[in-house]
Each structure stands twice: as structure tokens, then as C-alpha cells.
Length: 367
Image (cartoon, rainbow, N blue to C red; front, top):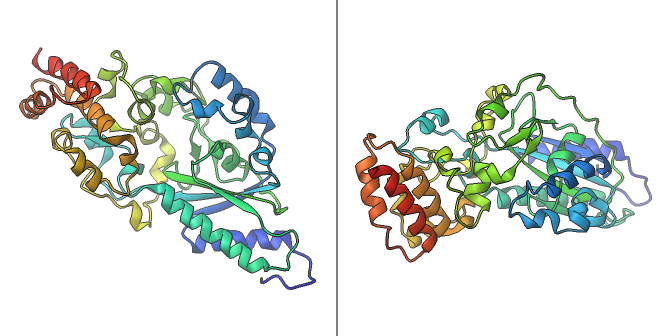
């Protein structure tokens, strides 16, 4: 549908074409929505006011109390529509439940077992934008302007995706889709094109609250409200300092993120495996042991995890998280003797953060 000079734009037809182009690029689904997020502002402000964002100061940094997050046209002037995209990431990995039940194994969130999704998703969004621009041509008015987001700026991506019909916000705060559960990434193109908005879908959680009940640290204040300060994903990825003592035993062997609320969700029975080669398991991370990973030097950590989202936390916090996992191995577990030796080797680590968590773990194992 190449835009010809002097012709008017069929916006509905362009919207359909954008969805087809998105699927050609590997997206599972594309939606389109308007930019009015005023209905979400009050809840976001209350969440910030209660401190549920923890040390994630960037949540409140953009605009007054972070409200730019709820105002796309303020974040990117000229935005009148948002193109939302879904990219499935569930890898063909070892059984997650079996991994969690073996205290000697390290559990890493399913999304982090392959390559960093930021670059993969951004490249696809950029390709979609270039396809749109190419189809509209240089004579189109207004000239196509856009900005791509991949969890990289203050954007209410779940709210926008829900508004565009890609799913509904589950009680665990993630987007849910009847055909794909929640094992997918979201991305957005903020656009100045007046594209017609898709209709949102209704919620299908009903009375189920399996995701809330399963949370190891009981981080959910209630449906749709997460206290990040108790969330294992926050504790192992976002938190820079010491993990609170009272929460360490509850973390178990989860050393990077946590999928418990997703694994418990009935809708994830329908989550398809990703077709993206970039999301395939790397370095055997779906079956690695805590001891094995704890012995990685910083050089080995950086080399093995090049191109991985995990590398973003750095070697120091990697060891901190693994030390907690080692400390949660039962003393009578077959891996306990090797865990004791591995922890003893880190008692003089140059990092005080690592030493502290290694000492804590060692005391639990030899108590």
C-alpha cells in the first residue's frame, strides 16, 4: 500500500497493514491504542507514595511524581497513537518446577536464559518503523515520526498493551493473554499517525488468585498491587545493596528473577514456545548448579554472559544472589559439602557485599 503523492491516507487500512508487517517480523501480535492514560494516574501515584517502588527512583523521576509515565504526548511531543507489540520468549528449557525443587540448582527467570531481549525487541520495532515509513513515502503529510520503547523509558507498557487489546492486566500486574499466558515481552512505537485504536479485551482472571498465593515472599499487597521491596525479581536484580535478612530464606534458589506467579497462572498452560533463536537457552543456565555458577570469576561471568540481560547486574550482585541460594541449601543435601567449600573460598572476597552474604550462608549450612 505504497502512499502515492496527492492521495489521502486510509488509516484503517494502514493499521491492518502494520499488524501484518509486525507478524512478518516475528511479533506474535500488534495492537494500536490512543494516548489517554489518565485513568491510571491515581493508582500509580498511590503506589509511589506508599514506597512500593523501593530503590527504583527512576519510577518517580520523570515529570511531577513520575507522571510523564502516564502521559505519552508529554514524553514524546506529537504522539497521538501507540503501536504496541508482543514478542513471545518462553524457551525450550528444563522443567522450571523441577529446578525450583532441587535446592542445589540455580533458578533463573525464564526470560533471562537467552540473549538480552532489549536489543532483539528494539531491532524488530525499528524494522517495523522503517517499513511504515517506506510505505508512506516522502510525500505523506504529516511526516512519520516515532520513538521506540523496549522497557527503556518511563512507559506504562502493560496499561498501553491492555488498552490496545493485546490482553488484560493480571492480578500479578503482568499482561495476560488467553492464547499466550504471560511469557512474552512488550514493546511500543509512539507515533504521530492518527491510527484507529483497537478495543481492549476483558479480564479473565475471575476469582483465581493462584499468582498471589504462591509468591514466596508475599510481595502482593492485593490484586494488581505489588510491593516491589519484597519481590524476588526486585531483590535479585534492582536492589544494589544487602538483601534483607528476613527475606533471604524465602528466596530459596532463585538467583535472578522469579517466575512463581507466572508458573502458577492457569493461562500459562497455553504459553507457546518462542520461535526466536536469540531466546534459546545459553550456557546451560536452565540446569546449572549454584556451586558451579558461584565459582565463575568476573572474567568468566562477563565472557559467558555477554549479550545477556543478567550481565547488567554485574559480578558482585551475581555472587551475592548465589550466596543466598547456597545458604538455602539444606545441610543434609548432597550439594551441601561443595557449597560449604565454595562459600569458604569467598570469605575474603574483595567485595564486602559478597563477604557478608557468604558469611550468612556459611553460618546456615554449618549450624
